[in-house]
Image (tube, rainbow, N blue to C red; front, side):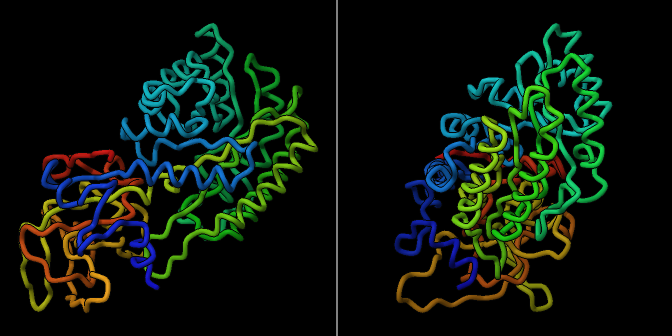
Length: 411
């Protein structure tokens, strides 16, 4: 079974038409125009409920806003998760506007400005400290604000989360304090006017291997126990990061959540037995929203160049950089792409042609799908890029060539 077939099992398809959140995709495109991002709120809630059923009850679930900062989506998240992780003043304001209390927000990022430190301290969030200088600056910001900063040390671990789409540890990095430096920095923190609460370890992202996630999580719990002796009041807070991936490409297999959850049940019980009560946080972004989003664009031209068929659409890399392959792919691979009004019908033979789906930009990088098999399409037909709920619009160079921005809706 190809990844596209796996992914299509998540969707409602009626008489060859794709439906999103109870409405035909073509109707949504007609109503709101294209290009259009559609996020299925019910799919997000189902994913959260599945996690709740599988994970230890003691493990708080936080949403990493960077994955998708659309306000209605963040507001939906605020009613279903236990907290949020932010990485800028803008994201902090967004989380607060969505109704999340400061105590349930953590603030990561290697380059926090004084304005951001002061706003975070006033809101009572947990600051993930990423360097000795940032620690000192946070303490000074607290004195200016008249409020003690609540901090956790972000650790750059000595190990790597293997098979990750992006490594966030295991070598030199702008993120976090090197594991071997952590004891000394913790000793410094104890001498400063801050409330030292815990640790934050984020080893990598977009991982589909249960075995590698388990290995990294075991290492995080072991590291936390070792560093806990440097907390005079005990380790009160531990963010173990996330890294849960979703399938995008041919050959990808969905993460085995049950394997990861079984190990977390064991490790959480051990940590609680050895260290007492410690608030444990799992921080997820893409895994919560990635599969709930679809990017719709419309074919505006069909052309053949030296035997290759191009479908030119009103969307492109300026609105969906990840699908173009320009957001970290070393070897470009296609996101799952379908024609939402020409979906295969049960029991009927389907014909297809090999096409490349491109956008309107004057660059060969503007490629949404290269050499994919699709039903015959003409100008006016819709194209849907699936798995587009995370790192889509907000991670794209929307001002490039000054095309109008796409719309976003939550259904």
